[in-house]
Each structure stands twice: as structure tokens, then as C-alpha cells.
Image 1 (cartoon, each protein chain N blue to C red):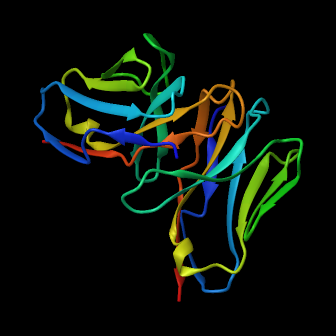
Image 2 (cartoon, rainbow over the protein chains, first blue to last red):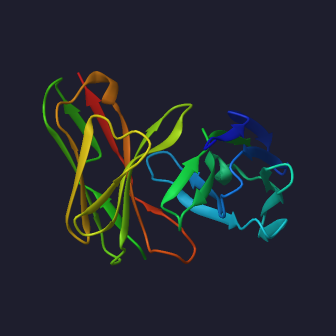
Length: 112
Length: 113
């Protein structure tokens, strides 16, 4: 199975709160799990990524938690800011990055 | 800074027209990709190319073809546009191996009437 299931579809968080977006995959051959951030009128841009041999990766306010046995990974945005309002896509890659399956996306709105 | 540019931001075409979407990257990347983005479906891969004149089908190639005559340029062709091809089209590039990171262009919003 090549799907990557992402939830929720949309999320509203208060400024300063924690935003959490979840993804699940089925193919254990995936070896790279990126999160992309997309602002209106722009293409997606890589935010943070993790390999399956690591359970957590943190970059500033953004953290990926990875659960290999459950085949799930999530993005946590700490101290969410209005500037974080965007659409977030999780993804899973295989085959040297040629095959990347994207989740359906989560529209995040951070209220000031 | 990697730059991926797409020839048009907005395009309106009629059913049955042949449509060309152009993508150019300036970082000498070997790999290039075409995706379409639809609400609730995320990004779906149409075609990718790992070298000049080389191409591989993605998940939804039906109704599309591609051309890569130069390393920096990757074109998506809709042979006979249909209304169900109304979508946002995103081009991306990457280097083989390494981080797998894809660099995306701003997208072309295509409307077929």
C-alpha cells in the first residue's frame, strides 16, 4: 500500500499553543519522511524531515515524532505563531526520493 | 538559492486544446518532477525525469506526456485538455541521493473550460 493518511484536514490553534498533525503509512520500505509547508500562492517547501532509524527530530519550534512499529509520524509546532498559518503536507519517500507519496494536507490557522 | 520557475501562474484553456506547461530550474539538478495538487488529495506525481530524455510515469500519467531535452527544462504536455485536468500543477527538482529534498516552483493554476 502506497498511501499516506494525514489528519486533521484543518486545524485552528491559539497563538502560543501546540499544533499537532498526524500521519500514517503502510509501506515499510519508505526510508525518508519529510514535512512540507506551503503558503498561499507558493510551492511547498521542505520544513523538516526524518529517517526511520530516529524516533524524534527537533528544529527550533518544529519536532517530528516517529513511531516505526506503529507506522505513524507526527509534526508538533510548539509556541504556534500566526506566521505558521499555512498548509502542511507529510510525505514518505522511497527509491532515492523518486517516489514520494504525499498526504492530503492540513490547513493550519493560528489565531492571534 | 535554488530557483524553480514555471512559465505561467494562471492559464485558461479550452477543452481539446494542446497545453504546454514549462518548468526551468537553475541548480543543475538531475531529477525533475511534475505533480498536480487538488484539495483533499494532496500532491500526486504525474511524471518524473532523472536525466535528459529520460522519463518515468508517476501515479497519474494518463492524459499527460512530458519532454526533457535539456537538463534545466522539463515540460508537461496535455495532448487534448479536458475539464478534469483543471488543477494546480507543480514542478519540482532534486539532486539524486542525499537528502531527497524536492524544490518546488510556485505552481500553474490551469483552468480548462
